[in-house]
Length: 185
Image (cartoon, rainbow, N blue to C red; front, side, top):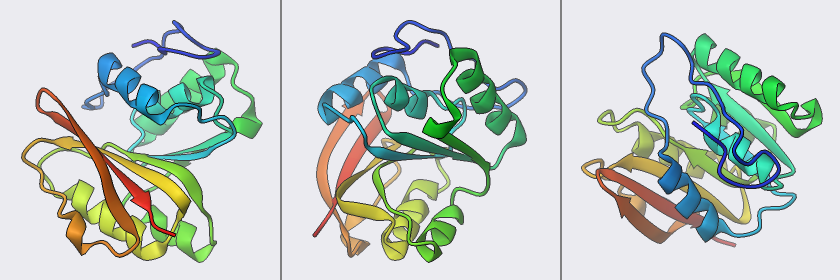
């Protein structure tokens, strides 16, 4: 897998060994970053980080900082290794081994806010829906910030249940859907 654009364009990143993950396809990442436009200086949170491809792409394109969260030790190590091999300064990232469903509560208590939150949970387990509800209830999205969810086409998100997040857009790429929500003021 390679970084698509920005400072680290064309540089390879490694997948975690011995872990079954489903990395976001290059074409989906490229389309998503084209939709996002300029993300310079933005604060990004990647939940269910896996290899860290989305967050590393964000750093490559100018994000101010990225927090990577994954509950699997090998995934967290792969993210650290990828950041190290690219020479990404430590001030630009934080890698945390934690449960992505519970981590927003910790952020909410600390009154942390993010401009972009990306989540790509395992398919078929309603994890995307559960995580969205948690993100919404702990108010960790900055005003007008975005939450981007990569999910399986049959996984219903039921965004009507959310209080602070509103539906913005949805794009389909084969069996994968990218849903974008915005924090209301």
